[in-house]
Image (cartoon, rainbow, N blue to C red):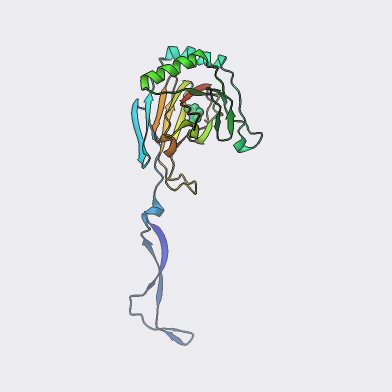
Length: 261
Ligand SMILES: O=C(O)CCC(=O)C(=O)O
Ligand SMILES: [Fe+2]
């Protein structure tokens, strides 16, 4: 790509002397226009949003912290089981709308949540009290994920998105209590919603994500997504609001709490 800039170019012609108001002028300068090549960094195109839809492991990227990757399993819960699980969780969890003090004293999160763990959880302006009263279905799902993927989850944040206006903004799940490079398992039920990931630039100081790699993963009924390696340090994620109607969706994010940290 080129950028158009006018430049002063001395005439290469042996110009005839020009007389103006009785005076001779010897130098003729042509105001001409030329195209100059501009250094590539000014012209970088923002990377295109890439969709991840295939089951299996996807490497997002790698930094000195290590590799960031996700594992997608859209068949983790067959749809007939996912149907009754969704209804059970929708009806039997004590959903509440939390305040998020990061955005002001009266700001309420645009979704409903409930936290299950022997420990309280504090994340970006929200305080979830400890709640050891796990729903038996959550215990069963946590045990199954721990066994199949050899993980040690002991906490779950349940999210309910009532419609397309509910969302969660860009964030990482990297609170100190989750330890270094925490694995997170996310299990979805109900309507499909987009799950976006964007790379945190090495120089994040100005908060400019224009040139960050970005992935979009549509998460459907019964889908398990594991976020592993350095994903919580090097990538942010969100569930954006939708312009079209969406039916309710429940998402369970399983985490490992290390209370001593
Ligand atoms: O709903 C989702 O898929 C993501 C939820 C999430 O990022 C969170 O609870 O931290
Ligand atoms: Fe998250």
